[in-house]
Length: 152
Image (tube, rainbow, N blue to C red; front, side, top):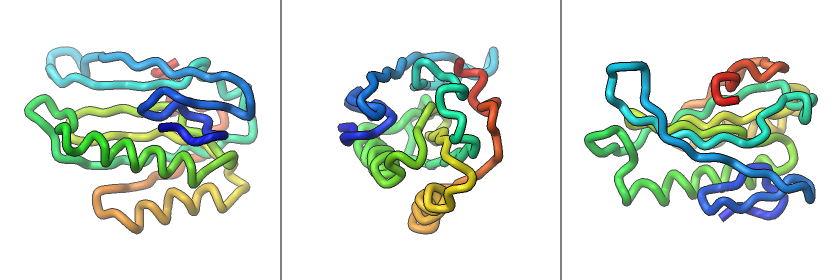
């Protein structure tokens, strides 16, 4: 379930962006031609940096999980991944937003944007990564949201 004030429609599809409606689309796509690996992608729509100019820091959180033969999460793992995602969105609050999530090959990558001048947003991700061996956080200054351009 999404939490009140969250920017991202979590696994339940519920979201609110400061009273404005937002939506995410989910779609399947195949990894590079010929690899045969499915990729599940959820993307915030519309995906435009200009709507959130303060959010110039891209954080890619990569979570490794127990995968099935197609590289997707086993049923027992899905709820754990969803709970992690919802917890991060709730902890971040209005300091940033989750704009995309990719799941494939035994990993889910959550793409967040936050204000690079607000250390508290970055601290949410770093604390989560310190608390889980299967989670890594990588921060990159990206004011034009080029890291998620392929999802637009």
